[in-house]
Image (cartoon, rainbow, N blue to C red; front, side, top):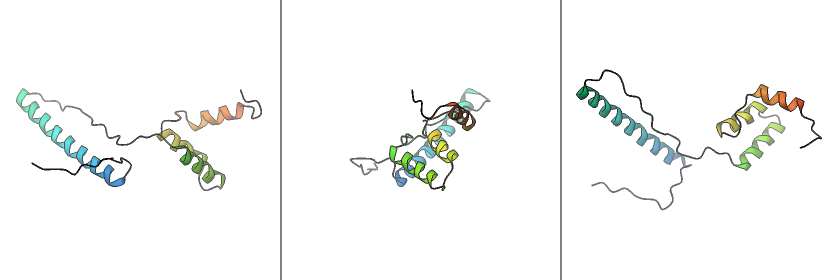
Length: 114
């Protein structure tokens, strides 16, 4: 029997934890694929089964400090508006395309806040 060290608090944002979990998922995925292949042979099925293991090991939400930092980089001309929007898209904060956002921003009166 193999004993694993248990941590009281597992920090999923630590790079080594992410690498470890990715390795576990890859190994499990390969094992499942092999097992399903054997099931196919046993049952005489010719199609390949499709499955997907969730690989979201951490919360994809974005913290306010990151948003502020991105805006500061934009203000200094280091990154563009698209970079900020891409970060927000990855976090699931916005879904619209840049053109749609720009068009809406042009139509809004900056003084009239509703």
